Image 1 (cartoon, helix red, strand yellow):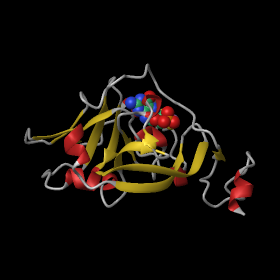
Image 2 (spheres, helix red, strand yellow):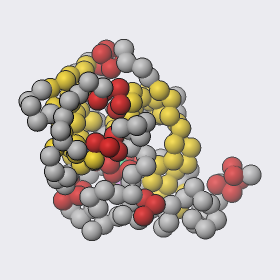
Image 3 (tube, helix red, strand yellow):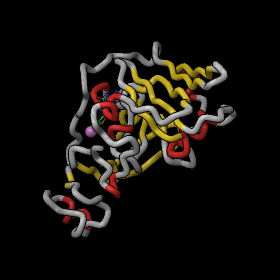
Length: 197
Ligand SMILES: Nc1nc2c(c(=O)[nH]1)N[C@H]1C(S)=C(S)[C@@H](COP(=O)(O)O)O[C@H]1N2
Ligand SMILES: [Mo]
C-alpha cells in the first residue's frame, strides 16, 4: 500500500509519517552540486582522519575494501524539500573508521575533493549513523552523486552527506562548513526543520 501512495507526488508529512515536515517525495534522484563534478579514480582516492595531535590515519581504496562493508537502506531528505524513501547503499561505517582514533574534540569537518566542506558533531558520525558509501542501488556510486565515495549521514539534511569525501578533521568547535557559512543551519535536523539560520 505504501508503494502505491508513494507513486503520487505532493504528499505531505500529514499523509506519510516517514516524510519530515515541509518535504515532498521524489522518485528520481536529483543532482545537487555547488560546483563542477571532480573526477577522482578509485586508484587516486584516499581518505584521512586527522586529530588535534596531528595524527593522521589514512586509507586508500584497497584498505577501505578490507574493512567490514554494510548494506544500508534509508530515507534521505534534502533541504530543498525533496525526500527519497528507502534508498539502498553500501559502504563502510564511520564507526569502523573512527575505531582507535583518539581525540578530545567533539566536532568534525568533512572535506571533499573540489573543496566542499561540512561540519558535523562526532556524536552524529558514531553509533551506526554515518557511512562512507560507494554503492547506490547496487551500482558503483556515479560521479555526479559523489563517487568514488561520499559521506552518508541520513538523519541530517542531505547537504551534510559530503560527496567526493576525502577526509574528516576533528575540531574543537562546531565551525561552519561551506553551506553553513552561507546560511544553512549548523546542525540540520530535518524533523525539526533546521534549514537556515
Ligand atoms: N562535495 C559536495 N558534496 C555535497 C554537495 C556539494 O555541492 N558538494 N551538495 C550537497 C547537497 S546540498 C545535497 S542535497 C546532496 C545532493 O546529493 P546528490 O547530488 O547525490 O543528490 O549532496 C550534498 N553533498
Ligand atoms: Mo541540498
